[in-house]
Length: 467
Image (cartoon, rainbow, N blue to C red; front, top):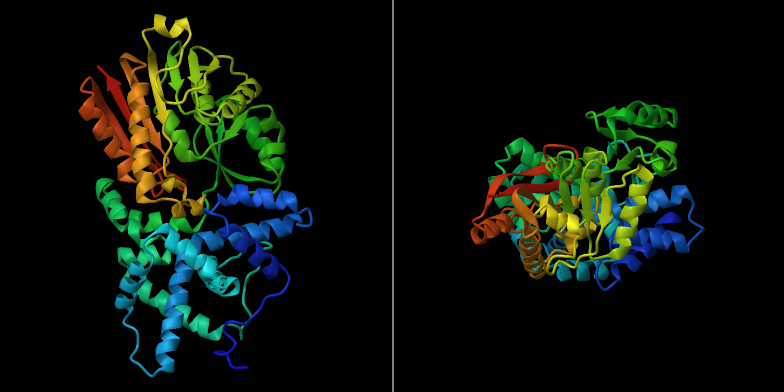
């Protein structure tokens, strides 16, 4: 059978068959699931998967999500190219094809429907080629190489696409190569302009999308650094000291959660950009702080580590089970000044009398619900959940939470707004709208954190002071 005839019938053995089933199950959901959580549930249901299998399936499925949009580009270009060749027509004009592709996939649903229609084996041909192009040295147990005589036409087309995109080196080409849907082009151009990122930083923003950020650790007290470092090294972790409170795990096997120093509450796992947000809450001993959208309490813990039980922290969230997690982590770390109070964002909660006696809080943190565009490295599936409609809804929610939370700030106190998003609409735009409606507040500073300046997620923070 010729290569052309055999295009849709090539098969993979063993793991590939199971991978195809997992991929089909994931994209068959009504909306694309958060892949790490969904995979954990799937693995829990199937004890037959060993640790090596789980690592392999995880890496391949995340590659599928990370490069899925690019795979659609390759498949469409491949099909058109061979159709033209079979009909003896002129070669494809590459720039015209890009415009055709952009117009074909105008929404998240267009992409998800194309994923569902595309044969899994065809899909993972392109994923394998794209993954191998960016991973010269494969991780242990991540073997996805193709045989030398396999997929010859696909490899030829892939190299042509790669050459064309790299040769152009324009924004739209970078977005396709890094599998960023082209409807984000206006937002990316605005971010590059607002943040004044130079060409190297722009290139770094895209290239970092190819990998997960490293694991960052935050010490609850710098005096624990030697003990934590010694245990990490003893257990085979390669670690780099970033600053007196922050460590970066370069490499390591085994579980961080099993370490005695973690179980004793000496450190937390927290992305570097998230830590940098926490550092903008410059609370002094004896001051009152409210973390309005605390989640599991990462930043609450960080603020508590600054105050050393000499001050008060209120932690709120709409999800009460999250507050139970905050309490558990606080007990483990020895922080006794954290008060947990559920809050749905509508009106101020009923604080204890001590807050009224202080005329409000010295610091209020609004780490707002957002699109999570700044976590695409860690959760690439989130880029297929962002629509104009949900961005508009998030903006309304963000501004409402910020406005309500601001009522708890005392005169001279500070309001800190943050997101794990790089979108202007969720960041500078919200601050501009808030200041316009609240002349008694002044912007002290605002900035983007993390990638592309650091090997981390991309986040935003703004510090505002009440007059």
